[in-house]
Length: 367
Image 1 (cartoon, rainbow, N blue to C red):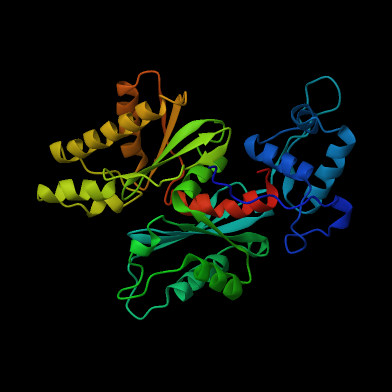
Image 2: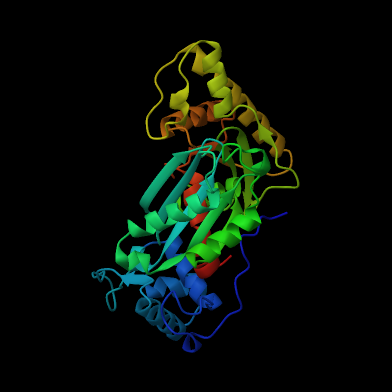
């Protein structure tokens, strides 16, 4: 079944809505259509919007004027040198809105704040489990407050919401030393009350896939197979921009936990596999063994899917550095020559940045 983010709210005429993010968040379908188009195509003129959407020039003028007044889009420099009046490119205003993303992982909790075009404005990470006696919900609420305090006032007043990325094996993870199992629904309610903001919950692998589709290397792709290389290897199928995860959450034990295990067996340090911004040191046969296992499982998964769906592109996202993902993608392309394999481009925490895009999708974009 498709992993629906959130159904768009019922349309409301522009004239019925006051401006500003803190007013009614219901947007017309046509406004969402224009915002979605500008997300995919920076610097689009009104004429190009009409060609791609079929909207009349008058309708586009009304929508553009309204979105400009709300600060959601901005005009660029007039493009001259063509027949007729100069075209004025339109783009999303990075400071038109912002959003917070929280990712609960097996090793870390990541908290990020992104602007309207997906640029990272704040990031924080802390190891798990947190100290005994800590209240995880309060720890997360305080982390969001710190993210907002570190953000310029103009963005802080335009927050669209908070995204919370939840893993499939939530109950099996140890978030607090000696603590009880975490309930996602209770955590969502607590954060909404404490922060006074809407909190959107999404599966963490789906969030990572959505982030690459909205802001990353998959921005221009309609159909692809997405892999996330975290503690384990997991995947999602994207068809016509819709994310599918099937009826079972299959994972493969060839992820970073396996890399740690292989290195430890050879008496080598392994902490570096979770250092997301530094390239891995050359470790010869030990890490090569893990890479071979990982590629074997990637090939197996792609080959199995291709019996049913003609997938030509794979996106590999990970906490591992881009250089490692690039090596794996090259090996995958060697094994399946007609396949395009692309490393993800969302760094630091793909899950947190991905789930931070969910409030934008829910409030501003066509689903």
